[in-house]
Every structure is written in C-alpha cells, then in structure tokens.
Length: 100
Image 1 (tube, helix red, strand yellow):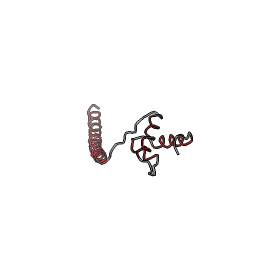
Image 2 (spheres, rainbow, N blue to C red; image 1 turned 60 degrees about the vertical axis):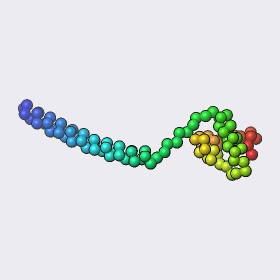
Image 3 (cartoon, rainbow, N blue to C red; image 1 turned 45 degrees about the vertical axis):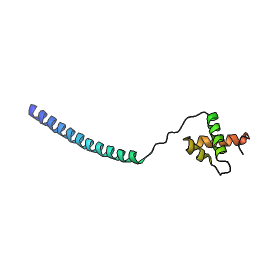
Image 4 (cartoon, one colour; image 1 turned 120 degrees about the vertical axis):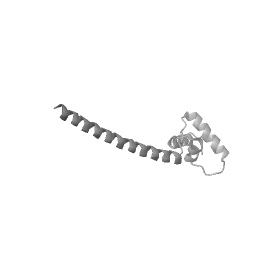
C-alpha cells in the first residue's frame, strides 16, 4: 500500500511540476508581450485640477490661440486634462457668458 501511495504522489508531483513549467513559459511570453507593448506605448497622466484652475487654463489657451478654431479636446490634450470635464466646463462658461 505504501508503494501505491508513493507512486501516486510521485505521479501527482510530476504533473504539478509539468504544469508549473508550462505556467513559467506562459509567464515569460506574457512578460515579452508586455515589454513590447510598454516600449511602444506612451502614458498620459490626466491632471486632477479644480474647476477654477481648468477655467483659468481654458481662458489662457483661448487668449494664446485667439482667432483660431478651438475645440475643448484641444485644450484637454494641451494640458493633460479629462476631455469630458473640459467640455462640460466650457459649456457652463458659455452659459455664464464667460465664453462666446
């Protein structure tokens, strides 16, 4: 009986070792792919500013680009801001008469 249990355990541990080896190889492949992706990608950090700070940046950007057609996304991209937030603030500023 000890021989059967010992053989079963050896077989089980052999299977576990094989599975671990497979997982290690898969992990290496994933790491390679992540390295490729991260070397080709750039990260955008969206700044978290108050609405007043964003308003100031919007006004600054509009003054610096006077006479040009400007979209909220241009401002968001320029200052690493959330585009939806910039859009909402510009809409509010229009309603308040701060922007034309």
